[in-house]
Image (cartoon, rainbow, N blue to C red; front, side):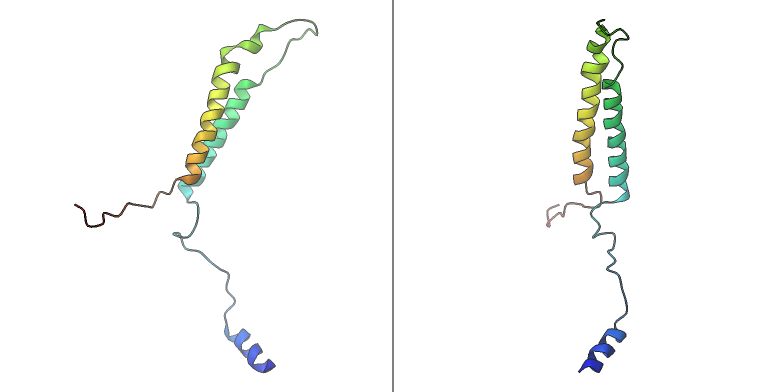
Length: 101
């Protein structure tokens, strides 16, 4: 019995479960889109950042600039929103016509 099990194991080729392109969850387009979204998110956080006042008791009105309050959060939000789209997007799927012309 042990010989038969060893023979069966030897006859089976060692294979790694390889998936073809249709079975992979993400394609190259998805990764490019996610990379672009990551850059957009980081750019938004970069716009929101900035130095404070050089004086400890001084007030710097630059913290209320449009770049920090509007543009930075908007870029980050769009990056996160588009990231969700980039994850869900399936470029190879086409709708079937089901016989309707």
